[in-house]
Length: 292
Image (cartoon, rainbow, N blue to C red; front, side):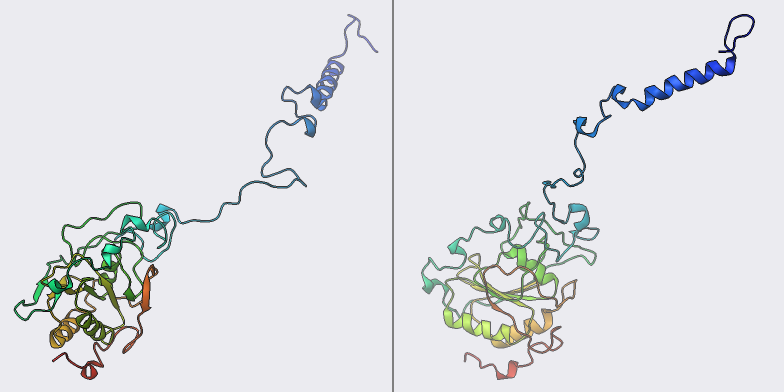
């Protein structure tokens, strides 16, 4: 190697030697402190898996989250089945426990016979124009301050129209909001009167719900309910029933004739009477025979 007079290397040669040394160290990856020079020495996790390896990770299915169900008006969007909120199948015991007292008579039926001296009662609740009923998931109870409410908080999924073995009010209040008529009768009510009222309701409109309720009194074991309005009766008066349905049906704040998603204990699905939107209320009423 060529030296200069003072016995030292030339500067460029010194720099070149240092570069060669550093390069050899970097290429020797076995000298790295993390031990990843060889793939087989990797002790961490591969994501999702190394090439050719079977992926045993759990498959996660899509579910609606609370954020996706959020609605500015009702808190929870209506009509979207969700196992995280309301799917019409889960946690139904929160509203009722399949208790037979809801649809079975355990009292003296004579106490519920129709009486001419008990007059019907019509009530109308004042509901502010900007009132918006909230939707609650099946993780929270809904309690009302009256036995037979005409409006209020309810479940996101409304009931399919028709007659039920029993349907809790947390469901049918949503149907009221859509303009439906709900017929209630006490399980001990006179069967002839029940059949007559049923005949009137099902021939008047498609958007109807029929269900027993043990919250009605012996004096007035029948009720027709619409959004904000209620008619309690001891006996069925065909003219009164027709007038109430014609004047009160389809007055809910949300006018939609779309059928519901909840159908637990549905006995008879409703059929269209005039049109799917009930353009004509009680069109066949003249053919319904009276009880007199």
